[in-house]
Length: 171
Ligand SMILES: [Zn+2]
Ligand SMILES: [Zn+2]
Image 1 (tube, protein in one colour):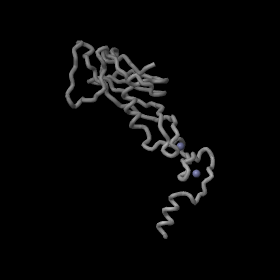
Image 2 (image 1 turned 90 degrees about the vertical axis):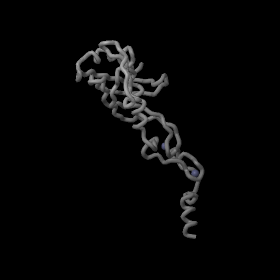
Image 3 (image 1 turned 180 degrees about the vertical axis):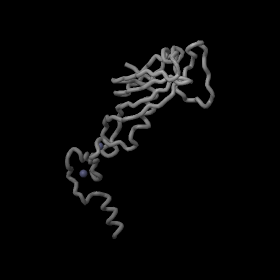
Image 4 (image 1 turned 30 degrees about the horizontal axis):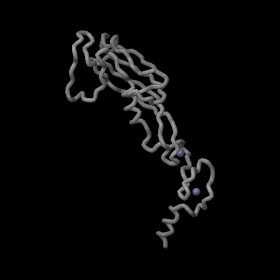
């Protein structure tokens, strides 16, 4: 399943016309599986193209910043992008854009576009900078590296190198 959408009908409609595009399931971007998504987009005809707006929940894969264990979690994001036609829907003529539209999302010559790339870029921005597998992740023992979520290791609490550094400070 994909997030491809045909916008020919909406492009022929008046400015302000709205279509809903809801999607739940797995998704791909650039042919690569990206995980799961639940999206509720509103597509609005603008004077130039189609404005795609709405919330989505997407899964992301990360390594925990405390215990280093790989995990999958959900990120919430808001898509707010204007898509521009590469061909005029009425005349069939190619539309060209100036440098100010560099990097804009384009609707192809068949009036279709894939919302996956916008979703992928917005997910990157929505992912936490320091992801943790869970809020109360206990991390790794600083002395032996054991995962403290899996139970206590044999190390003495005094072995914590932060205490050693403090002792040096007061020596
Ligand atoms: Zn963790
Ligand atoms: Zn330990």
